Image (tube, rainbow over all chains, first blue to last red; front, side, top):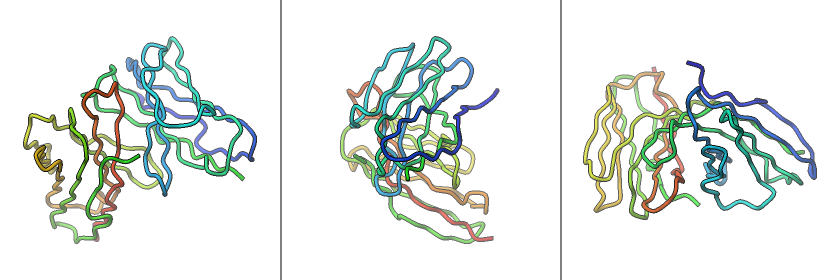
Length: 114
Length: 112
């Protein structure tokens, strides 16, 4: 079974631009969550989607948004990029929503802002 | 914000030795999970322990949970060089729809 796939793996953008990151969950998984990982703040929850609906959102500004499609694939978008948005963005999927579901992570998209 | 704090931040041991990492958290939880992250890769789920469990085993891994002290420990026995990675605890607090809060991680180095 293929794992969680994130594209692209690496991305370089400049301040003020916008970016879209993609995540394909494990086949059959309907819940997708996004996390931001930085050396200073560690791993921080961005949002979770289940059946095309956002179920939960972390403490990030409105520049960060996401969506989920009917095939459970998800995208996240960051607009008006800032230097501080440089990070590893991780996507995770699980069979169902719920606090007792182990999450399966992709290898992430490393975003660098110049 | 990070709920969990791992201790130590870094740990270096010889192959064959046991490695113990600790995690403390602040609020009541439904469960606690441990994950491993190799450099430049995503996280790999290791084990989940529920709030009504005190100890759980999986292969060379042993996890304990003390909800009265709001702490957990991960023991890796007979460590191998391939165990070199960062280890994170993650809590999913009661009442939250689904928001895993990760600790700051322990960087484990196993020397051959």
